Image (cartoon, rainbow, N blue to C red):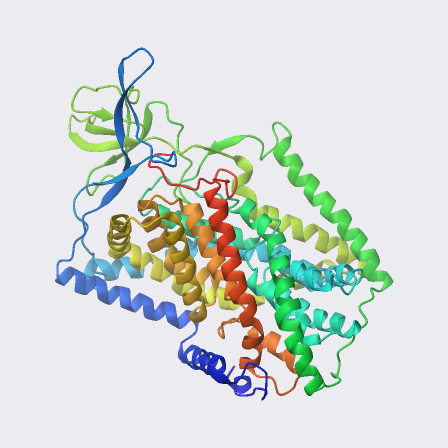
Amino acid sequence: MGGTSGGGSSGNTGGGGLLGAFLTGVEWVGNKLPNPVMLFILATVLIIGLSAVGTGMQWSVQPQRPKIVMEQATDATGAVIERKKLDATGRPVIELVDDGAPVSPRSVLTSDGIYWLTANLVRNFINFAPLGVVLVSMFGIGVAEKVGLFGAFMRAVASVVSSRMLTPTVIFLGVISNTASDAGYIILPPLAAGLYAVFKRPPLAGIAAAFAGVAGGFSANLLIASTDALVAPLTERGAQVLDPSYSVLVTCNWWFLAASTFLLPVMGWAVTAWIVEPRLARQQQENPIVDPVGVTTDQSLSPKEKKGLWWALVGVLASVGIIVGSIAIPGAPLHGTMPAASPAYGPIPLAWSGEGAFTPAGEATRGPTKGTLNVKPGVALDAGWTANEETVRGTFRTSQGVEVEGRFEPAPPLQPRWSQAIVPFIFVAFLIPGLAYGLATGTIKKAGDVATAFIHSMSTMAPIIAMAFFAAQFIECFKFSQLDRMLAFAGGKTLVSLGLPTPLLLVGVIVLVMIVNILMSSMSAKWTALAPILVPMMMMAGLSPELTQLAYRVGDSVTNCVTPLNTYIIVVLVAVQRYKPDAGLGSLIAMMVPYSIIFAIIWTAFLLAWVALGIPIGPSAPLWYAPGH
């Protein structure tokens, strides 16, 4: 990065003035930061140190949990009944009540703490939820990318559009390219530059539009992508800091992000047509672009590629048929419902019928105990038991006659069985069309070629694997030290006491993530660090984990195209320099700032309007958090 960031164009390039000074400062600061692997190592060391300091200073935080406020009312017969108290918007009123003994830090720098860390080092890595999600998804995606399916598909779509519709088409292709993980960064910008050159338009405008779609609209998509499967387990683990039975579907943001797939190209089209392209056209008149070496404007498909695309379409239909059949046909593997798996890697819980998992109060030396309690919510119980819609609490007498205080937790609600198979869906949906394309074009001639494609996809995952190992240690040390719960309870209590309206809470999350994204561009790295804090804090303020995740994804996307720490920004800069050799990183970032600003404003407003209208953001994804639901 340092070798290319020093360059820059003079004149009206966005490299000078206050904006240029700001971008230079961001670049300088960003280059001083370590990469995500070192960031997680340092963060783990910090957590270990704080756990020891907090233990020595006897820090403590009183745990609190949200509880729905009940009120007395009379029914049609005049009888007094209890019902949920609702606010002016019809949502249940939630109050915070003390829940158990104060929580204190647990030092990792003790004999037991060091033993725990060393004994669980490998287990922490293996159980790191995003790792398996990404690796399994990339097996299928890697085959489709390696055989050339993505490039051929993008050229096929882009070659049939007019000059007028070129910009929204390029941005739309960029937005949906995140289904194929990061392939859009590599394929689309140089392709768009060539297409713009064909229509005698500034090639840099094509690169800007493509980069805006791929990076600025990274979370939006019509389909469920690997990014959905990546963040959902992290959100679920954050929610379980406060509510151990909470489950988050991979599809929880689908409807909002699918709608955003059409909004973002319109926004990007306006920014390109009114701001970016006129500015680049003026610069091109003052400093004509070079004739790039090795850049072709021929976007036609060969007969083999056309044949391959037709066979890939057959593969898509076949994979969709397999998936739909496994869901829709009675008795098929994914037909019907199942209890939500909670925790993410725990056993499937029993259905609630008076029997549930019994959690003893305090530390349990023998683990959870099973017991049977034939009660109904709202019924007074003997032996000190009480019941409501959330839990059953009281004293449980074991078979040995020992009384243990605790509570019965009802099982989570049922989920469709297919919701547990999203990652295999992604694998199959890319593998079958990729194989069909490769066999038709001859890029796959033997079984070894498929293995080579698998290996190629895993080679690109090396940075993710390295980051995952140290991110997993950070998360588990944070959890072991109990600092995550302490921070969540303290922050949540502060948020509730401030009484901020929902729009301000959502805007606050988005702005925070935008700022962090400038310094840490990895989507999974940021959410790994932020989810255990933000998700339970927002739950205590009444916002659902699914809505908090959605606000995170908006904030994470809009500054992707202006952060110097974007892994692929150098790839895009190389594409720019083929047309403008003296362009530097500041030139590219200045070109993208208008997209980032407009996307942040309009996309945030779109989210606030969506929430204000009470529209679900995805299947089985509530907007608000109500305890026990």
